[in-house]
Length: 146
Image 1 (cartoon, rainbow, N blue to C red):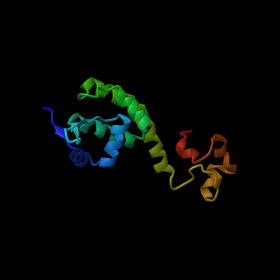
Image 2: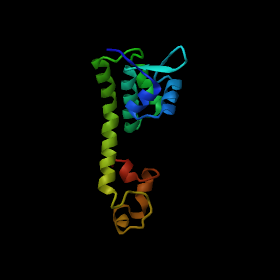
Image 3: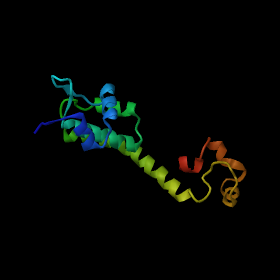
Image 4: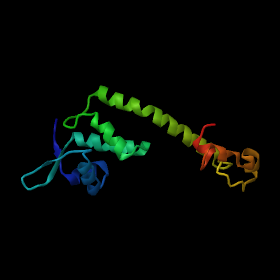
């Protein structure tokens, strides 16, 4: 059953500020119709699109990547289960990489993370002479899985 929501109702249902919803509309991520008085009205399928945007942001996707993903979905109706499955499958490698990085961070946070500071006793053992710098800047032992 199709129903419509005002921007305030959509904001309340999704937890997204009305200003952000207007921004999403300006970017073409969501669409609204207008009442004769000029008020925005969103279909209930917009709830799913906004939820998708929120989940994608939590995964770490940029708005450009989210835009690209949403472009593959129908804008005027809810996507099919198959369309959602294809989109979810495309996220899996990125999620797996992020989970692995977070696990490395958790496991190494109290020790040497390969930043090159060499100020902890363990850094002299795990990163002698700042060998982590050969792998690039930043916390190499967290960012890299080597």
